[in-house]
Image (cartoon, rainbow, N blue to C red):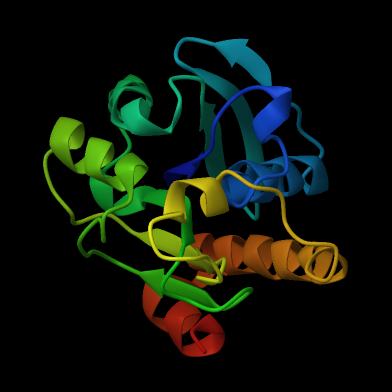
Amino acid sequence: MKYLIVGLGNIGPEYAYTRHNIGFLIADQLVKGLGGSFSNLRLAYYSEVSFKGKKLHVIKPTTFMNLSGRAVNYWMHEFKVPFENVIVLVDDLALPLGKLRLKLQGSSSGHNGLKSIEAVCGGQAYPRLRFGIGDNFPKGRQADYVLSNFDKEELPELPGLIDKSTELIKSFVTVGPAKTMTAFNQ
């Protein structure tokens, strides 16, 4: 069984620890924890790791957030991974910091990375791990908020939340979405 794990984010050191890059941070921790590393390949940083007999193709698109669908489509077809085995790791303003929610499908909720995946890959029927980043920003300042670094009060919580996210991914690929949602959706 093959899976494509997609960490959404933007490339470049200025974005490395921003809220919008939580997908990259989770993907990094997953790969590191499974003894892998990333290579810069077509449209993405790519790693292949295994977990309990499951092959995980992990990507961090180098297309920038708004064109993430190009990378997802390419790698999904490259390895013939069905859409239901694509797990997108994404930041979510609608959830408080650190709240995790696995959804098997749904709208983009205005997220440009998810909009791109829907447009290029043809639909909303793919799993996504929504990682809450909160919505503590003044009206009209959403872009500044998601592209800003986590606050010093939030930073101590991040390692544990990222670890919990990687455990959710491992659960998804071993016991399936239903049991994973029961165990992890808060």
